[in-house]
Image (cartoon, rainbow, N blue to C red):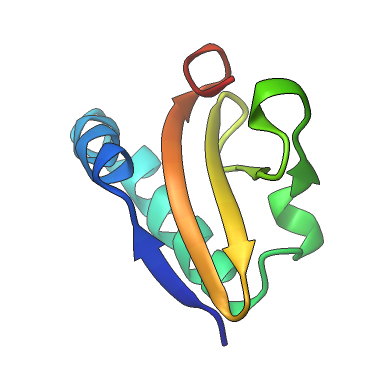
Length: 88
């Protein structure tokens, strides 16, 4: 099972998102658990990013909220979280 590493930016942004609604908080926690189990689970809609985010991946929390992350060995580095427009 991959290890999750939370970058400072991710921690700051997730605290803002989690305070917005209980439903969003629950979906975020479920997504993080699924990411740790398997980052490429189809329900996450994980995909590679390009351009200045080349080498990173994105997955969906809700219709608008995304998590960007990178992979190395058996580690998922959580980089950013927010709306589609905020993270890309």
